[in-house]
Image (cartoon, helix red, strand yellow):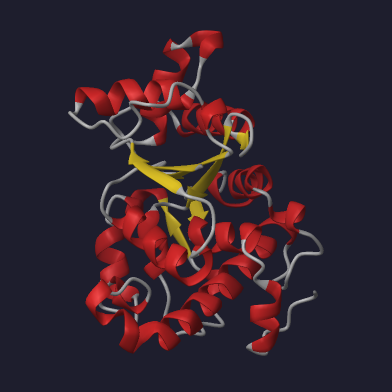
Length: 269
């Protein structure tokens, strides 16, 4: 059994549902639950548990209070083969009354704690938020690796995405089930483009080259975060490179290399 923990209850499960149908059908059973708050609130909740921190125990308590019984029969991460978490960087968040450096320290600690899916869980970060997956011109977008947004404008990022994106909504990657059969081919192609763009960009962020990394470890989540902070966030205008976590997750855990090669993507196998 695999547990997927999402920050929000709308976009993230919808995106994952498409990924699951494209690449994970017939795989292990999975459970989805939502935290319904940001990573900085999760940090506080985890800190309150001290050395006994366990994401499943925490979530079970939280969602039970909401009247949900999704995790009632599970008590800890040991009840799952793997645990994955998807949260937004959201460094524009002013409600925490913390400096950017303080927010970054919390994210760094969370990535250090959630660094292995078979233990405490593995954390994936959207920069600056889940809508990053739509921040693209018509696919394939060869300029994707250059896109950045400042902290000042991250508060308006959803509006910026709507104005900037070639795609008016999420249907190009997350169709309604009734439309699945008629859109499956274009969906697969669009997801391959998104995986290609985000993998290359992750390598650009970490190593300065818009090409495939030599190995998956070269663009691991802690490496991406460290490079984001040193190369973008620390700039005087406090930028962040737009990057989506879901294509990187697919790259990490789906045998995607052959699919990309068959689609004539220049990827080392």
